[in-house]
Image 1 (spheres, rainbow, N blue to C red):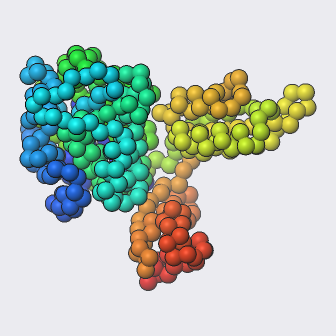
Image 2: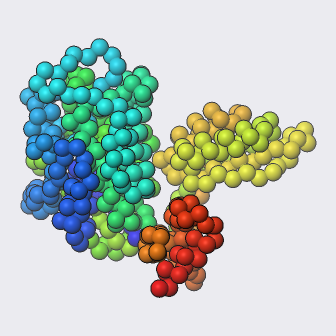
Image 3: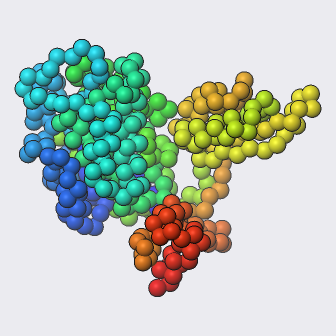
Length: 422
């Protein structure tokens, strides 16, 4: 299994994750050139060598109108007293409360709706665009909960937004290019102390970061500085399947993404890419018995469960108390989605209790490659192990071809198979 491991012993930030992943690519400059052609307003990215504690890595530089965020944004918002310890993309947020206009940079504010327009204009591959927006929505939802205002009232400062859009987009594109079968991350070092933001002096981890790290193993260290930003936390939460120690794996490439500040410990995120021999994983099963919901209501609940991160949702007929026919609802999930799914079960079903069981399941190591067809690229998933091998084409890609060509799904599959054997 192609496994990617993030070592977050010095926290995580969007630019650090992007830099670490960039080091895993054979053609780094080709990626940077392609990225700059996307046309994120005012943004140009570059990769610069950086050395921390004798370790050489990369700093991912996203310049807005020729300057990095800390060269102007932090200078204004943090009153020269405290810059963020990685000096990176940490997005600034505001909401529709009374807030003085900025005098120096005249930042406009963009809400989630504007972010969606910015991302749509980049014409990213659909899976990448979906990931970018999901990460941004998770940040907006965290800020909404912290400030007690609707998501629609959360706004992002324009300069900070462009930096963050660049970092988030780069990470999503890089992960799509590397295409690991599984992403694992270490417990996250939050740092310690306080940080000065647009809303005032806040404890580390910042409230939005703490909200995004709910359910994620994290800890504070001796470094009295902010080590994990909301963007870093959102990216890890979105992509990491689980958090823990480095799994048994044969490493093939290692990348170091550097922050700007110097600490006694190397200020970096380390990404290790390799092959994992593990064929089992821990998964959580949530279940409940229901005898007083309609089929429509159960169907709606299943949709909400998948949206909340369920790996699978199934129903089975059961006979309940007083000879009532009922339904056994089962939800499979990873540790990090458990709390959200328990809340979803109580919110959208009539159950009064949810059972939880931890299971070990055997899995076939999986890989994803791309097949070129006359209608474009189609992803193919292949699973091998236990003496068997099977593969299938990605449904979303086949459905796209079928819609574009006005053909059936089977015809689209046959076209992909012809491309496979060409």
